[in-house]
Length: 118
Image 1: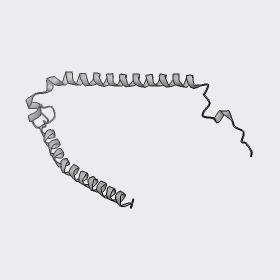
Image 2: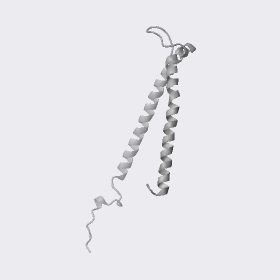
Image 3: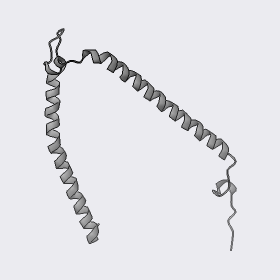
Image 4: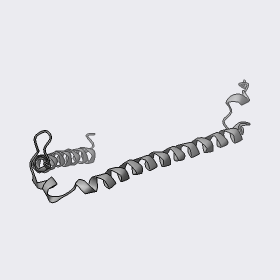
């Protein structure tokens, strides 16, 4: 019987000499990822806070009930709200149809699995 000469460079059971360096690198990049996420959330909170602070004074009943104004005039967003409501009213029917189609496909798949045809 012949033995194949083994090369320790490719043996996965041998502890690597660079393990400590890799762990430090992993921790450094994990910290960098967390710091980046915290900075991104802070910037988002700053922008959102500014929009809310400056936009609250513009909100009134007229803003929600008046139609879209002509250029240079004050008005509201009633037209946009009605359009959004109409678009949303059409979606539940489409969603229900998609859910029924998916449920039927799931039942057919289960039946095929039970019958051993899949």
